[in-house]
Length: 296
Image (cartoon, rainbow, N blue to C red; front, side):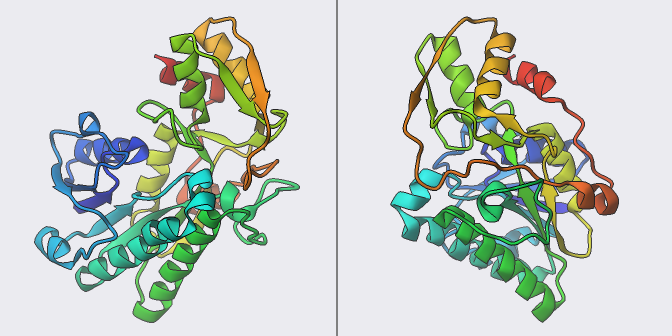
């Protein structure tokens, strides 16, 4: 099929593009290269340098997509706290631009949302119908974008799907964004630079390998709408993650601690049983294996 991938030069997007090209799709990458990198681009895809905050109708008329994987985002919690208007411009207005450009073509959106930033503090693995309690503008913007997708599904009978990602990690991740803690740890271990853990390090996250996320995106395409968690249902503390990164890297190093950051939740883990039952998707990559692939 003809597929457009927004943020297709980025970390997750470039892996999605690779998978779609490999199965023979006509793939178009949309990226403004703010964080996406040209070295991530697949030669089998057509590239369009474009910012999703700008009108997309003319470009989508040219592409005529059947599927849109919407991954372009402002994905840093700290930035959203410092610049909430910018965060909303990208994550809310940008998503509306994509929705409206896709609508005349009957294209389905598979939208990258967030689990940890939407559910807030988790007393147990969060399921899709749990209360949404964002603690940052980023989580609020992603939740607003989800609601626009759901409204379009009711109003226009579209079939858009939102995937609430846990903490995604893997090759090509930038070592400078809040969600990229694995990349940050490994980059600094490799360079022999100091590692900083914010807070006491006992805050937990659900770390899911990018290859498993790509399979979830593919499983969601063609579904009749809905919201699905994409994670592992396994909690790992930041301290445990650092120890695992040290083991994989074979490097002895200690981490320093700094004050906790505004907007960070203490416990975040996702229940993925709905994706298992309705999408036929399960995470397949254990953390240690994924870390070895990433380190390599």
